[in-house]
Each structure stands twice: as structure tokens, then as C-alpha cells.
Image (tube, rainbow, N blue to C red; front, side):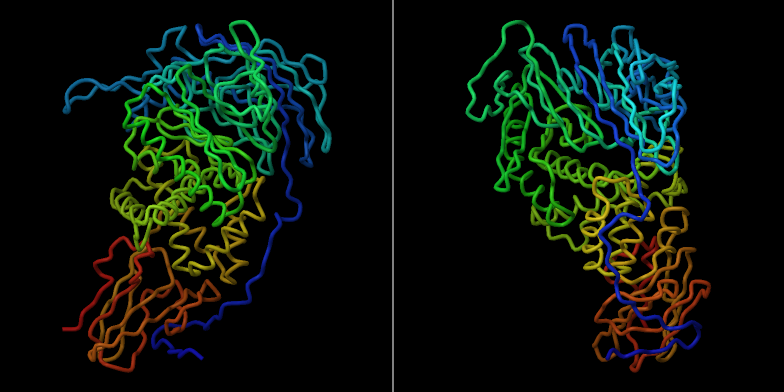
Length: 619
């Protein structure tokens, strides 16, 4: 049995870890909508305009009767005076990719690039007609949202078929989507089609698009694209007719049958996904890297880049296979037979079965952005959280696992692969600009607060959870989370409940404090008197405490003090002490020998914003 030492000055019942429960299913009563798309797109690469026909079969799996539906028209954001444009004028630190900066360092002049777009450079999606089950319906375009009033409601458990014809124009590359990127990629086609908004237990999700995050309806996509025959296309789904397009795609024994004319027809099919993305350029080089498990990795990048960048893209290919294996082993098996890494966009952004990244990077940067974006396949694509409402689950979980993968694959040997996130979070807290993680992605006061919160504080949620429940339990939680919620729309509470059932530890306090408040952690060693050690909680957020004591004779002993609200404790070789009730500002325990020094959290996995008071030396 482990030795148990009781506190002298704190009050509370000692709590043992309960028997961990196991789950592999979503909650009883869970439901989600379904949207199956069939689209035919005719692209004119000279005008950057395209005509579209869309058939959407919508299944109402909700218990509610729907009298309206809503579509996202994302390209409408790339117009002067749009809300995206307005946001660039009002936010303190606009995204540098979306503005032009002039003037001196003392007097900078920032101008929205959207504001300067000419009529032939803007983006738009114009709906020409829309029918529900063959009958016209009334609709209104409000910025980036199409509001549709149904002529007859969609009853619970029933389907409706919507047929739409639309015209669209690809904007100049401003953010994520667009034509003629900084690196010369012709077409980065992300969020390019009328996309049905998600309806779930919280209702409709229809935020105006200001260049942040997404949420989509699971379904199937069949997309036919007619485009200039010189363009190479890559993106979401399986290419059904490689023998009719060539361009490096495998024909599986079939002879090429390239049709005559100025255009080729590309036919793609994507099953059980919630978005569809493609990119095209006449200078793409297309490589296929075959993995041993049958997954084909596609790499599309401009062959006109400097050789040093092309060499990086070649070196990237086997490393991407290693990343795919790592994520499949540590989260859950990748369920599709292909994935594409494509040069395009304006940095790095994940999409269905592919990512778009800028390509003129150092090798280290190219690997890093690929590791992050590929990890998004699990966190937000397969585990499709509403990243507009919970960007920390999307960006934070991805940062956590991609840092661990990079540490392993590149042999970086960092004790805490997410140490950079701790530094960023500490900076944000001390800046006074922190906002709760529960803030909607669009509503952060600054881009800096959004970025550090979502990426850094979000990743610490998991790495610090290792400190609370143990690294083995976090590893098990990720796998159970995938088993229960892949191909669904999990919420923060869903993840918390999986972690509770795996560990047997109550975690409601942790989810609340870390994501819904800006309470910070600050513990210190208050004093040591004889053989009694007194700790103090200075910050508002309570935590379990790991303590290492070095005795005067040179020996060391580790102690674990559970938080009373945990109703349990992590498995540890440390001496287990009585738990600490959060309302008590101090906690004292006795040891058996003279003390030389005391250190709180030797691991550094607790996000204490003032580590200087974590160590105490006896004079």
C-alpha cells in the first residue's frame, strides 16, 4: 500500500480513483442532419467565373419540423463593404494577409485589400433559381447567407430535394480561397459552393463569414468539373475517371481516352464527408506516394518553384506517410483511401481529405505546417466539432497531437512537446488581453487573443490533462473519443465525459475553469517550518498539486495532492496525500525528515503563470 499523510490544516474527505467506465457510443438520443450533393460545375479560367448546377438531398433527422433552411455563400464576403471588409477596419490587429500596410513605423496606414477589389476581382455566388421538390421557393441573400423560406415544411425523419442553378466568380486571393495566390497558384477553391448550414440540437448555425472557422453537414458529394484541359486538379474525394483526364493520375490498367476540345471533365466522389475542396493550376506537378496500408498520398505543387522548394516537397512525402501512421495509431484509423497535400491558399488550412498550404517554405516549415494540417483530419474533420463555437477543440487539439508527432518523428526529444504553447499562454495572461475559450471564434477582440487562446491554451487543455489524470489516461481518452464521436459533431462536454469515464476522475471543474473563465493558475510554496510544508493557492483556478521534496540528507520524495472536486486521483508512484478543497487558500502537510528544498510541479505540465514561487529552499 502507498503511504498516506494527512493534512494538518486542510479539511476534506480523501477520495480514491473510482473504477474507470468505458464507452464507445455517442449519447442516447444523439442525431445529426445529412446533406447529399450532386454538382456540375463549368469553369472559365479566363474570367475566373463558373456556372453551377446543384442538387441537394437534405435529410431532416432532427425531432423538429423545419420551415426554413439556410445556405452559406462564402464568396460573397470578398466584396467591398462586406462584414469581412468591415471587420478589417475595426479590429485592432487585422490579419496581415488581408490588408495593405504603408507609412512609417510610427504612423502605419492599414487598408483592407477587399476594399480595393474591382468588379472583376470580387467574389460572389449568385443564385439564379432554387426549387424544393420541383417547386420554386422564395429566398433572400443576406451577405454570406441565403435565407430560404420553404413552401412546405420538412417534417422530422423526412427528406427534401433542392435544385439550384447559380453563377459565381472566384475572388482574387485574399484569405484561404481565391485565384492567383502570392505564389502564383491559379485556383484555390475552398468554401466555393452554396453550402447548407448546419442545424443541430442548438439550432441553426449561420454566422456571417469573416474569414474564421467552419461547421458543416455530413453527407456525400458527387462533383463534375469542366475546366481547361491544361489544368491539373486535386482535392477532396476519389477521381472516378482518371483515364479521361491523365495528368499523372493512375488509370488502373485503362487506356487514356482524352476527349477533344478545350476542356476536360473531372468526376469526383466523396463519401461521408462535410465539405468539398479543390485546387487547380496548369503548372502543378503531381506525385503519388503509396503507403503500405493502401492509402495513396497525393502531392500537387508548382514545378516552376526554385529547386530547393521542390526538394523539400520530395522530402515531405515519406514524412507525411509517417505522420499519417502516427495519427492513425494514436487517435484512430484514417478511414479513406487517399489524402492530398496541395500548394495553394495563403498559409495552411485543412479541408476534407486534403490540405492547402503555401509551398515556398523551408523544409522545417513545410513539415510543420503539413503535420498540423494533416492532424486536423482527426480534429474537426472526423471529429467534427463546431469550430466556430469551439475553435480551441479544433486548433488546440491539433496543436497538441501534431507537436507530439513532430517530436517523435523528427527525434526532437523535448520533455514537453507543447512547451511553446505554455509560453504563449503565459504571455497572453500577463498582457491582460485574454478572453475565455468559450468566446465565439468571430467575436474575439483581437486576432492575437484568438490565436493564442485557440492554439496555445487549447493545446494546454490536453497536455495539462496529462498532469491531472495521467498521460496514459489521456492517450486512452483520445482513442475512446474517436471511437465514440468520429463522423459526428462532438461538444466539449462529450470529450470531458469520455475522459471522466476513462480515468474515473470528475472533470467538470476543469472544463469550466479552463474554457469558460480567464482564471489562471498560480501556486507557491509559502513557507517551511521544521518538518511542515505550507503551500498556497494565489490564482483563482484550483489544481491538483505534485510536489517534490529534497531532504537534508540528499534523498528526494514525491507527493501528489488531489483536488477534492476530482473525487479521485491519478495513478502515480508519488506518496498520496489528503485532497485539497478548492476554497482553502493554504494547505500544510508534514514530512518525516528535515527539508532542504520544495518544488511544485517538476514536470512543468501545469500552466502555472508564475513558476518563480514554485520552488523554496531552506536556508
